[in-house]
Length: 390
Image (cartoon, rainbow, N blue to C red; front, top):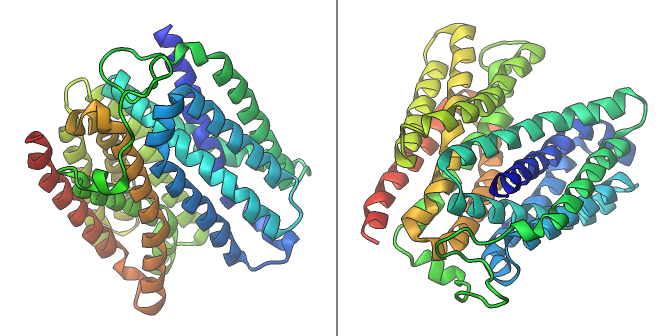
């Protein structure tokens, strides 16, 4: 039964990734239909991110009250409804309205599932589950491309993904009896009673090591998203590559993350979470160094692959270490604020580099990544003695 539930969680992580890349792949067709500037995609993305931050911060309270299974099913259902709403929208304002339940659903399911896996499964499963997210994120553009090239329009691309999410919602509802406490203290409901009261944001921040891990997560997602958004522009404007070649090079960063997480699952059999995080940071540093050194296109190609491989173990390892570092009774609250910090980094740091690239120089891209990496490594190392003393 435990393995069946794990399979369902794997499906849920694929489902989490499916919609994440839809907006980017569909927007070139969408903005022309709505007669809005191409930059307006950022508005929708920001609304989704704000909703995700809000729901991540509420994940502790919701999980204690409902349990992970019900939160996951309800959140996926909300996301499915929002995606269907996108598919029937005929104005930019409607897209913005549907982006609200989209973000609220995505944040709750992400935080709740990550905590459940951190509590009940080995570190290798956390790495492989996030690899499944990469599979879903890679499949999303193919589904949208199928709809667009088939003459069905972007609306049907969103509708296909909505139908898949509805099917997953049904599976999650039927699987609710499987979502039981598997031993140890958790934040789950037990016989209709809450084990402890949810922590306030102020209480969470006062936990030793909380501020450091929040900054660590902020920096990780800032680095990942900045690389994904600006790598192509850096290669075109700084290295002189064609846009087509640069796009192919930049895609290797995401391939590196997905392949790296598949490999990380095996490495966790030998290395603990802290060692995995340090190993990832070392790979990221090596990749940034290759971008800085005058090794031409080969250096840029290798650098992006190494940065992707380095990013692979950091996110799942920080999440998986949370119950060990902060206790199972506080892990859901901690993962919620970690997720919120991550989305804040995703929202603000890539646009800040865009401002730097526009007003100073895009050649500062590797230095920007290096500064974020240095802060991330420093905060992680500062956190460790504090949590070991808990």
